[in-house]
Image 1 (cartoon, each protein chain N blue to C red):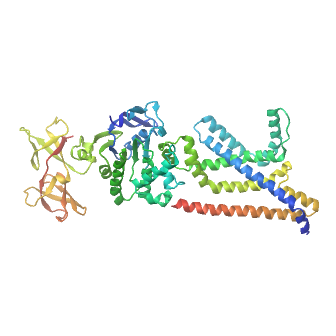
Image 2 (image 1 turned 90 degrees about the vertical axis):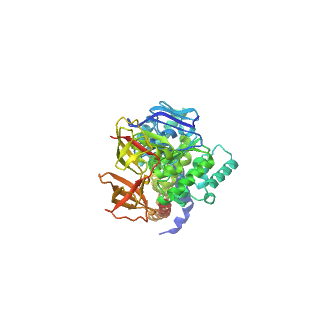
Image 3 (image 1 turned 180 degrees about the horizontal axis):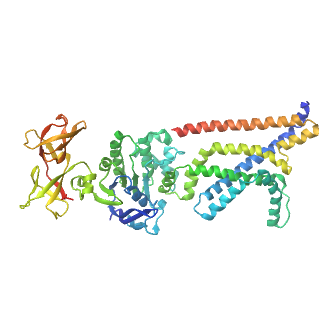
Length: 347
Length: 225
């Protein structure tokens, strides 16, 4: 049985539907992520799970018990759901130890002190117990907020844009740290973010959200390599759509020749297809007879991301090791190197 | 001028000062307790509670303090008689204390309401997410922060209250100023007594407002972090 089950969830703000028909399941110990642009409704889902937003339709079940349904809502303080807020919301008038121990009111003094010590050790803040929140760095505040949310052993922990207030360089490292902490605590977690690198670094399962719905709920690997629709394919990673046609023999022909290993995500009702070519699918090869002209390039340190044009004008992206330094306007040899490709009927 | 008369009157003046300070301290404490309750009522989702609190605050902020003092002087004994059935003269100190408490509560309410509203909503959500109910959230998270933030304004209001205690002259309570005036009349040294009383009020109020300024600076530094 899944720890968190959301079924046909609908939430409105001032009569406007923000989330509708949303479903997801999270197993115990798993880390899930809702990924989407701002305004897609992802934070609203999180607040509904926490109990801060009334549910207009559908159900939210935690460990088999319905906590949210129309006209039936378990108050937030009784859900045993911990939350890490975007701005951390640490209590400024209490020191870090008191913040972390805040949710442990039912424990005796010794038990509480022991639990606080264990939580601070888990997040590596033992030395900060007597400090006040404003005396900590952003990353330390975030870990303190995590320790505070984990201390009462919630059955589920929610993280709202956990890294958005931190420096870009810190984010990926902290995402891995936080994942390790959550896994060490064995806690089930659901986070929301607009940053796919964060989502991929943190989560076992990612749901791409758009207009109040989850378009695809799967592992990060599958989202990138097996997107179920065009929106997900465009949203995740980079790539270009290569025009293709299915000939009488059932082969997929393109300007780059016949493609093998096509996996069509939809039933191909037409013979006209668009094939998704990721930048790493297109390899630079000087010996290849297939040429493309460099339209633009972006230096990324180890690699160049080249925007290329085929003779027909078809555009493609290619990721090339940065010692292959080609100028804009130059013709370079390219070769498709893939073991699977995604295609959709042309729109 | 005859300074000996001032020295002779010192015990009476100290007694008067004691009345003034006692009145102020008790009215500040009572006013803050009632003001906090009024602020919570005003911010309550219950329409009846919030409406009655705002009518109360609006009313007491719109009438002169002198009127309230005179009014409670007659009203308090009447209410006690109505409740217990027998007349009970309570004297000017109790009636003035009730008047100041009720009047200042309206001002403290507005200060605390602003303080509570200035605490980010996330603090409430964070407390709920940690298993706290409304009462615990207010007592442990919101009110401590609101009081801290509003401490300079609460103190400022209390200094004003200290100066306003002189209005009890209207109901004949022998506070510091009233004692000074009556002693001055008796000895024929009224200007000396009034000047000296002014100096005492000045020293106390000025020292207190320096404390307020120091507190404001300290809080500004803490918030800058």
